[in-house]
Image (cartoon, rainbow, N blue to C red):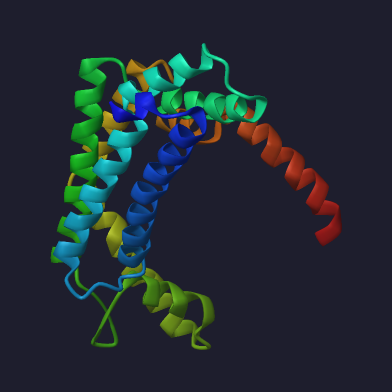
Length: 220
């Protein structure tokens, strides 16, 4: 790889640029889809799935992890070493070394994308005869002055959960749990928290309890 021939500074700059490129493309598509902005939902879902795959491929790139670890054995500056160690943690958290687990992770990503695409294609949400998006229904639930209209919007949103349950969501949950156990985590949530936040779910709940204890007296 040409990146092996770069100075530590240029290597880190290129690594950051590649990371930002993939993540910003994914995040932009994700929030456009989440807010139901694209007119062509199927195309947007396909683009979002491709961006997610590209992001995950970068985060799980064993070659980049090897290059980071090689540079840590060299003589980087104090600041460069701190950055390299951060990249080492990031790649280490996301890299799936087991071929079976990697195959299952890819299967899960595909299933998630297919479920989202199916829901956007087949589930039509309406209120008072008008087609609605989920963000619009959420907004109505939050701010509409009519209790009857808020309730109707809430009930219409509940169809989303029912649709997902009837279209493969339980199998998706099972696969997520299987992947987490294959990788040595307590469950899928624990896996996500450790990989994304660098702590166990037990530690996260401890911090949240501390936050609640600190805030509660202020709001009572």
